[in-house]
Image 1: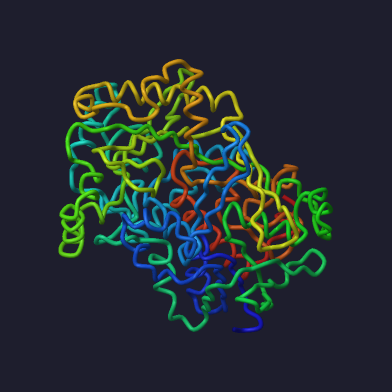
Image 2 (image 1 turned 120 degrees about the vertical axis):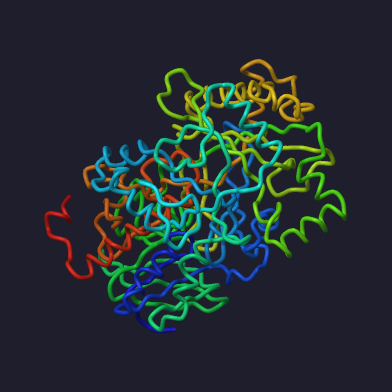
Length: 544
């Protein structure tokens, strides 16, 4: 290892892999990428359906749990997060979604110039290689594949036709900014393999002599000199090491660990830091606050025909057939994953754009990644797109190896509770609409005993779970915003040479899956960083 490099990137997740590629691309700067987990050599990472195997694998998954949730019957919710090259892009559900135009226009309206949909669109196009071909909102020569599901599934087709009966139009492209519709998801796959951020961005850059990638290296704090970030301390096994940055340190550890690192380094709410005898470098009350996540409500149905993954996985011949399809043709269930059917629509009368999202999965289990049921089944998952409930991430100890306290406060807001009830009711109406009705034998969960609003809400509290999109804990905003942590160029307010680039800087959660938006944000951040290296910001820009 070098003792000093130009740029230190902490975390090899979706954003970290992008930055490692882009900052080392011109050969001018020495870049070091530090990742707490191992290399992405586990074969289940690369087989699309393999996230069922990595969901609980502590070798490549942090396997966090929230604090007991007061609005979820005191349950501690399991939060898987990637701990390997590629981060969560190596263990996620592969869904390729950008969000809605209004999400980004709202960011700009909150005091973040440059973050409107029109200004983000060129970066979305730059990152993607979309098999739908050229279009005004699509890219075709980027590093990240957006692949359509070509094989048609009887269950998904019935789902689409039933949605059309309710006036929801079929679409092949949910990523134009106008998201409403029903169809098949596009996936981050190529040729039957997962296309993680590590595959798309890091792998092509690994041979560059100016890029060092260090795995199993957990960063424990940022070393400050006054209000300037100078170095990081990290652990490999029992060894504690230090690495200095000549230019910048960029935290890409995700919405749970980036705020923890800031707090451990003396940047955060002063009252919290003093509680653990951490010297206060910068009192930033927004660090760790504003936590948002999508809560998924998993309705499960028994299906009338043996056409689900449950049926294939329960028999030796079915498993062999799946394996042969993938081995010989890189096709079949192993090449697709679980969630195929997509639906974005409105359920609240006051909504002027889609407020819920469906993931239709062609298998069922009591918990995502758990053993499938012994009947033909499907999972009919629905989530609210823009929850108003807010939580927090806070250190519980000065020990950097102890996970922080995570409290999402699901269903805390009245809007979220109303949306959850309306979403379940709409899901049931859809399941009771032909032709889908003919395939739905019985509602296994929540079951027809749950009919009143209070009974449906109890089901949501008892069985609701994360759909793996925690964000917002180091939110982007102008200096005048007392809860903003980073500026629109993702620099930490009041700290030199330190940025945060990951899902934690989202001011508000986007309407959909977060992997692709985070990659877009990292593409933008790379431009900011390289531009600042050549032409440092003016005093006026620093004061903004």
